[in-house]
Amino acid sequence: MCIYLNLMIFIKIIRGFLSIKRKPVTTEQLYWLNLYELPPNTNHQSDKIALIMQTQYKVFYRNSSMTLSNEEFEKVIELSEEEEQGKHYLRIRNQSDIHVNLSKIEINGHHYKNFNRTILPRSSEKVLLTSPIKNSPITLILIDDEGLFFSISKEIR
Image (cartoon, rainbow, N blue to C red):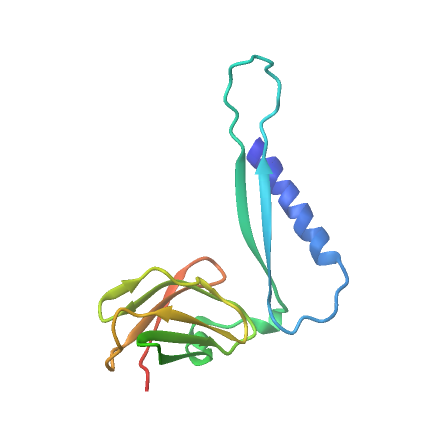
């Protein structure tokens, strides 16, 4: 029952949010929706444990014309290697109007875990590398609009 009520409240919040008149959207917008579940205070005993649950949702808003297929993502993501103060970085550029959601980065069999998972539209992120990239394919595992994983592989030229 509690989950059903939270879902109904969530849907009402989203509908209200989308009904607000705003200026035209030129890039996808990212909002964070935080929901807190507080247990009802029906038992007035002094010894009890109450769990408060926080659920955090990423809410993306964009025009339907901004949608990209998984194949089109390969065209809008650019990769380059940079060196800064003796350290090597992978630069991932998002040339699209929507957010890129990364799950995993793999280079030479090494899985990178410490990086910003969301790349904003028309921006870039740097990932610290353990060693220089030597003409190795780079595999990015991305998350699509349905929450499914897909991969793209690129080489730095």
